[in-house]
Image (cartoon, rainbow, N blue to C red; front, side, top):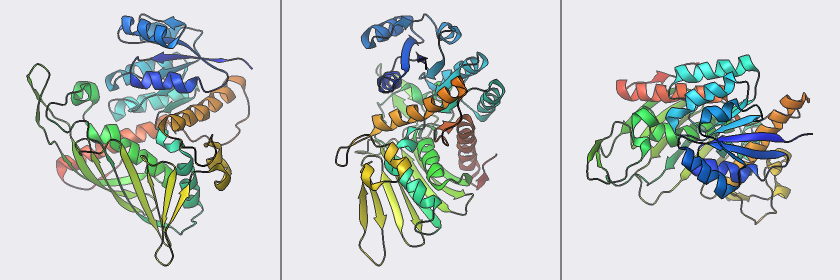
Length: 373
């Protein structure tokens, strides 16, 4: 059983996180890196002890020694590089969004099917132990059928009008910002837990700072949303609402949902990921702590340390990679599928693009909009 050789495109935070977590997996070798700047790629390779640094992403993708490519570039580079990876017949794991629009993501989904490769999108919040447990409870209707879900993803890193980042540029970040950047995580996560897609949306978005000031004191016009709220309907009949904000002081990464069912509610907060709250009407509320001895088998497999030892975002990313590379090894070695894989597929990523576009259309036209399938 040989090693699987991986190439990383990108040299920022995501790329470094990918390298760190890949090195926790047996049989995976991070062998190459490339970026938009060859000097940054060389520095990254030297600092993280990656054997090869390429002048361009295209060189890395066409290297026959590379089995899998991780795309950790800014949003506008996702589609062209993802397409080239798939056309080369390599396995792909892309940071979200999958592309800049649903036309592009639809092309990628078709290419994946044509080339018979394993391809996924990094929606890693799916891979916390207590998320797996919550999904199991909902599937088994432990507390009856769900009827409502509420939640939010709140940040503060763009609170001031002097906060500037490439994501503010729609040419690089896309037509949506807060919804696409963090709202997409909430939507993917809740659809995953409910095992039911969002079918209809009604959105109200807002740009708090239509003009910002950069480091050179130049004014920068902003077209994308800073915050907003969205009403949602799910295919299973559940109704809900979520809020997104990158301008909420004191909130760093508050990704939270609460699902109300017939006899109880369950809630999870990414900033306290080792706790699953269970709300009751006629008896005391409970908190299930992350402990592999208290979890179902699949959820316990995502927990790597004893109860009381905290696990967080890097561990969820590691779980995503383990799930993805199990599928890659099955494909590469012609092995039978061991179990259903939980990582987000290109079909999932394509549907998220459709959902983002429906939210933007709803906001513009002030009406309910169906999410295209």
